[in-house]
Image (cartoon, rainbow, N blue to C red; front, side, top):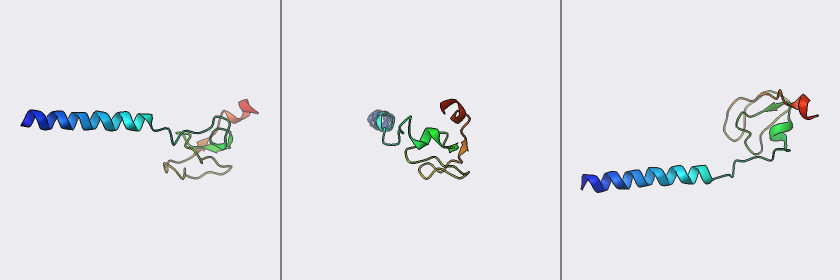
Length: 73
């Protein structure tokens, strides 16, 4: 019985990991403000990016200065 419970638990963990890796709803457009703003989310969450310091509305991480912006323009 203990072996069955352990196997079910491992299957659940593996399934959850595979599902979360395949969920790309947070992915951003490389040409969007998530990459081109003055301040960007380190995770490049969709809908993030700003011209002022702040936090990402999706993952709540602090924005960082976009050092790549001058290279893009």
